[in-house]
Image 1 (cartoon, helix red, strand yellow):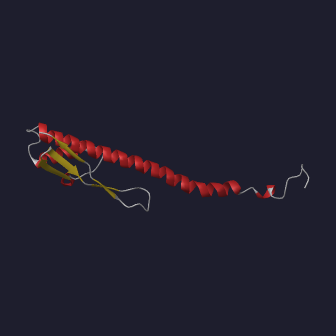
Image 2: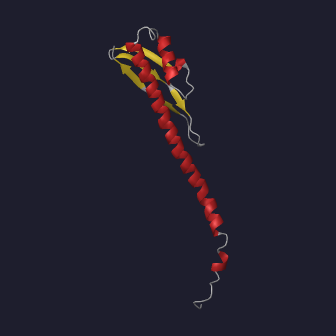
Length: 127
């Protein structure tokens, strides 16, 4: 084989880029969707924690607006902006630590094959 002549393999590399692209794109898209899902999961947990924290504080401090369990649950729903959470998902209890609010929320991933996970942040505020 002479130096200046292309080898017989050089002419058969025309479709390699398309094949490599077809192999890499699904893995890359799955990875990117996974990163976005983890971000959504973290945002959802943070929002739910903020909602139970605000509701527990309202129940402990603001006795006029959050005197009953239903009012504390409504406060938690109002604080969980961006999420659709029923007021019945929030449980309120008066414990030794003060007013404790807990939420149970089912988070669904957008990537197929992953089952939903249950998030359950809890906050307690002393009276």
